[in-house]
Amino acid sequence: MALALFQRVEISKHPPELAARALGLNPGDAAYLLTGLRKEVAKELALALLAGRPSREINDQKGTDDE
Image (cartoon, rainbow, N blue to C red; front, side, top):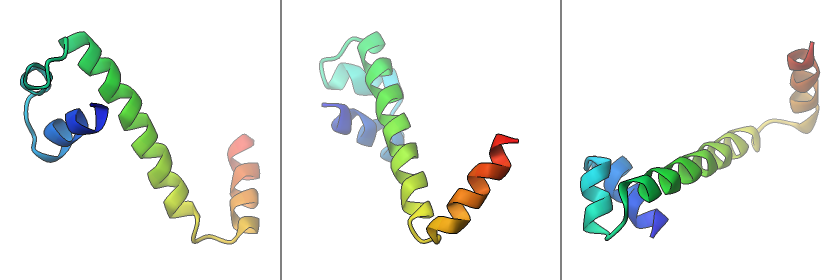
């Protein structure tokens, strides 16, 4: 359900309220689902982008960010 909602809103650019109604969801529930899925997509994208970097670079960057 969350994936169908995400596709309608983020890929097909439907307004969230209309996408929620089309899927039989309450707009508040739809907003909650979208928020969670967007966080997961962002996390997966970041991990995919970092996967090509050597682990030492990632660790060095981590140390710089902590300061």
